[in-house]
Length: 266
Image (tube, rainbow, N blue to C red; front, top):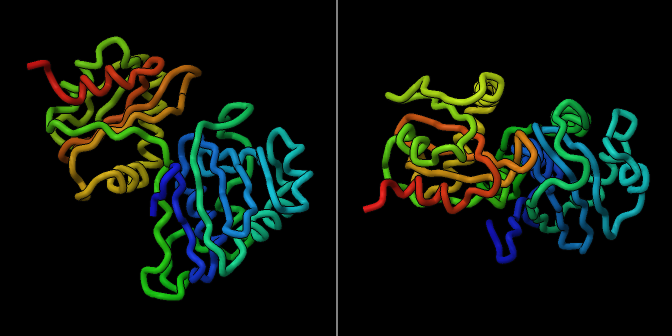
């Protein structure tokens, strides 16, 4: 449930295990984002999350015991107990829990550090896949969705290779997997290899995120994400038919991406 101001309800008062919904939201966050979790109690905690890891706690309001986590530039194993207590206190049962997503906070997005969400889930005995027993009524808990904040571009049905060509030099590196355009790519080998590895690990999650931006699952869609593989660049993700494209776009190329996705002029 998306509300005005960009917040999204991830747990309702009827949900039996709201901390599970919090962890699922963090676990779906593959590209670096700042996630501000807000409870209807008035308390809030803001986390930097990337690659299914919690990097740091950047803000906390209305809760005690956050000092150790707030003081850490990067969370380590010694912080896991303090972080778990903080998340349990925030995601109190019988209260609504919301999330607002934004650009990652201080220190950038290094995926080799931080606390894995899977580790936190294991310690809390949380199943990261959605299960019916988490809600008091069938279907009562919404599934964890994608990062808020992507800009959805209108679909044209054109080929992804044509889309890449129309983006021109602004598209530094890209690749296509699936469909009749499978294997098409361009750009520095190192960057293309990074995109290949990312899709090998996260293809299903990317497709779920794209479906959540569409009225009909599987329909063509393009998202421009304000998140970087290289400082100052963005990620473009597009789908057409059975093909999926991932690319690195130079700078803020929202308008050029919009024009390219709409197709050739005239």
